[in-house]
Amino acid sequence: PPGSSLHYDSLLSTEPERKVRLEGTAFFEITPRPQFPFRIALGDETTVEVVGTSFLVKENKEKETATVIVESGQVSLMAHQAHRGQMLYKGEKAVFDRKSGKIILSHHANPNEYAWKEGGLSFINTPLEEVCADIEQFYKVKIQLRNSEVRHCRYTAPRVLHQPLEKLLASLALVFHLEIRREKAGEIILEGGQCREN
Image 1 (cartoon, rainbow, N blue to C red):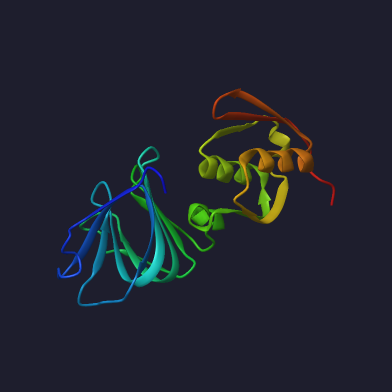
Image 2: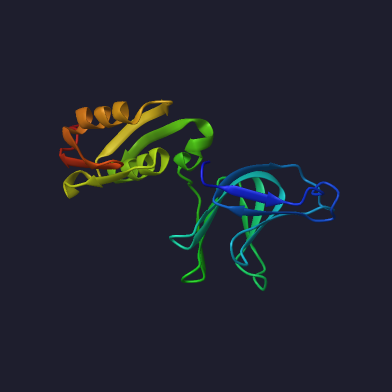
């Protein structure tokens, strides 16, 4: 996605170790070659070592986190050189928090982590608070959800592909009776609203 960069040696395929340096977010599909390990170095000593798999790596410098989500195969996340590595398997997500030095594991990754790759968002019974966070990340905007009572309202829209931001916001406004205001460029305020009745 925009704002990400990948640095690698031009002799990558002939080196005994395949190593790249990542800044930002990237999705990888790696062919297993045990004799030629594939490693992704992040901004500090954090390293992702691959055993043949497809996965997403995301470094967030502001939050001081590194995230790995495994779509297939297995990956080892090493927090620093002395760390022996946390193994991750298909469907698992790990977030390394550099401030605390801890790796947090979960088994259900948000499908919208791949939204930029897929070309759109997907929501299945998702709290409105998470919907807004995913929209913020995908469309590069800031959203304030002013009514705390609607944060946990659930929203479903399985495939929101190539949809303009205004159309998606209009859909949310209609479903939850929200009012949309724009303070300045890139900042959206959602006011009022109520959960749908089941």
